[in-house]
Image 1 (spheres, rainbow, N blue to C red):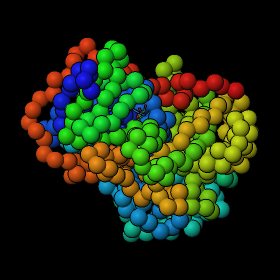
Image 2 (cartoon, rainbow, N blue to C red):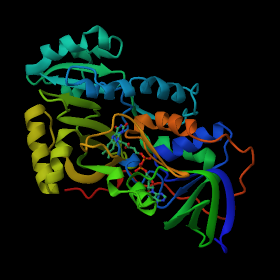
Image 3 (cartoon, rainbow, N blue to C red):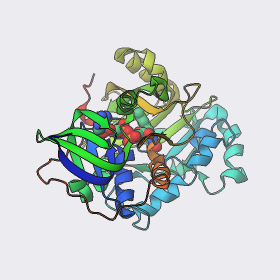
Image 4 (tube, rainbow, N blue to C red):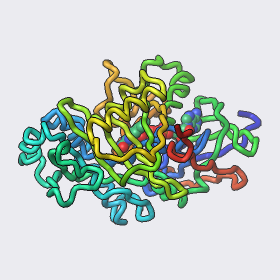
Length: 391
Ligand code: FAD
């Protein structure tokens, strides 16, 4: 580190997705001097490719019991809502809410089974059955749609969420070259200005999503410490109507999870996950699109998709490892020497991951960080609906 420009901070964060940006804001509030280092663009991994649903665990209750997944998530909508109203741990008043409540529709054949579950005391106050007059236009097909429920789970406009988190903290967010070196007392990185910086930090936290694998490799950790679960998401351009909804059928996963995004040119795009995106991993784009057309013809045959164009988007969910390759039940934070490697598991769980990280840190030093002003900040990545090649 002899020629490196020294920068001393309490905490260095590697990776500017939701986990890193949320943590930066929490650290600042708790009095730490912190620096976030991003090698591509903010939100470039999973965060801007996510659907923005602030899950409260109800999706995971679909096997008609409330499992541990749903318990971990249950407080999240309330916690995020407090931030969005300006009364929470981080001020998110400038972030946009895309939909106040995510919906859930049951196919005609399943409506009564689901009705008794959602009517149970367990879910009281978290789920409302909507009268048919309030169903969104896309779901007005009484031959196919048996019931529509509104969940206490909002959907956020993720680009505006990231801007709201990053803008007050630009001096603490820096662009680095992808190569970095972890040393005993810190981290050596190359800034966008070509200079080499020696970051001396009491603690370092990697929230680099799939990039955590490189961090683990530098620390000589087994590759099995991290896992990826791939998805092949579907995009529908010129979507027939705004819709934020899961479709529930006999299985324990939604057949489709649809969110709607307004592109910068004003065009509405549906972004579709759920089983179709999990099964789509084994399909090429043309096959995914054909399967999606078939699925919409089965679920909502009255939809007019004649103006629509389609695209696929492959993206991996990057998570801490579990023995069976399934999703971890909550955020994962591994401590390896002076470095922590962290995955929120869900965007909605970023606040819980920050709690875990803060609980594991030494107290702030009280020293302000001197970060060179000429060292540039990264830009923002584009979400998939802005960069797709439409078919
Ligand atoms: P990422 O968002 O992947 O960010 C990692 C960042 O680190 C990136 O900016 C990357 O460029 C940077 N980076 C990588 N390597 C380095 C390095 N060496 N040095 C510096 N920076 C580096 N969760 C929900 O709660 N609700 C949803 O609706 C939802 N929908 C989803 C839909 C899809 C298709 C996917 C894939 C995930 C979804 N998730 C959802 C999960 C959620 O998106 C992720 O859990 C969350 O975004 C992970 O955030 P992160 O900050 O850990 O990682």
